[in-house]
Image (tube, rainbow, N blue to C red; front, side, top):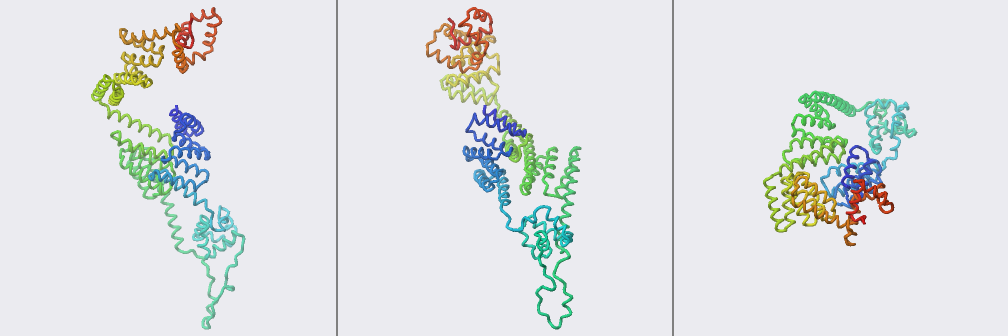
Length: 571
């Protein structure tokens, strides 16, 4: 039940229905309160709803239940970060990396938390607020004394730098233009030094005429170095624009199935701009279509590595990992080859939980399981193991018999005889639910195999479900009317049912049978049926109505079940 609720929660989460996901995970937790994975999943759902306090509580519970599980610390860090507790988030991610030093999710989370910690520290420059927002540029444009400075690239660059980091103001205070701009922003008029009030060196008699020729020390002409930087920025912008055009051309070629041309365009885009990993993931997609899986995997690895360096969108990194997983699935030749693909899909889901990636993961896990069964399938060895189990059964070594029958079924899961024999061993061991399950599987594989019915009937008989055992034996006789084991089973069941009908059960037997019957859903439905409740009342108080009810086969069948269960007695 808990697994079913968990599966529903995962499906809702993948579909973006986080409220339903929370509800399903809560149902699962109610059924399995010590399952750390359920708390982790609900924490993620709460975080997706921005309910970080609840996410934090679940993350703490996850770590408490499973302190050696790295994902718990990832949930804890994310919840702290959502609440603005950057320092606590850093601590959580570091503890997680102590458990799993290679976790990419924890490394990425730690980087985010550390960045948040840096942003939360107050600026050290007291003038920081005056440089914030578009108001700064509006004030400088409106004031005649600073309007001309905005045409000078080096001044603009300095002001942009100060706007990004007010602490860098100290680097530019020697520039009179910056001082003038600061005065405008602070509404303070700074007294700039000029020819009259500047401290002058003592004049030499031989050079008085040259004094009037001196000019104030200011820098009206931009320096060449900032102009060169601006040119570089312009060129970089042009390269990015050209790279995007190449990408669009590559996309068009890809849609036309012209893969070689698409590769050329994407490669050119990568050469022009190495800060956009979508060029790499697109080229990887083309390689995947072309069947060049090794090239695809290399491009995906480069995209992930470069994406980490550039702090790219986590969805882009997840896309690269998903494409890599798809390529690994394509090259898988045996069941073990699916392990790297499954691991890669799981990493992609930690970056971004995408329904397509989740489906690919499920498909890879199923393909691995199917291939494992194919690799292990060997009917000859299965028969040998079954014979070994038979020998152990004859020697009353029932645990060893179960072991051999289980190995036989791993080698050939379609053998009804192995299920039948294991059911007999489980019955001898008193493991009745397991024996019943194997007997039902035996009948499912071969409905005409009489042993399946004798095994199932025997288990039901030992469970004192005599009505059900009788039905099983009678069903088996339809396929093998002269089978003595089935006939004996019918006789034993009838004896027990008649014994209950006559009221010959001891008080202990009656009490045991009634307690067991009350756990049977069929008996519960009969007792809660309003019609049957009225019928039972009529049997006690209205004999004439009871005679009418006895003419109804369906009613009498239900009455017989209650009699057999010891719930009612016929006198």
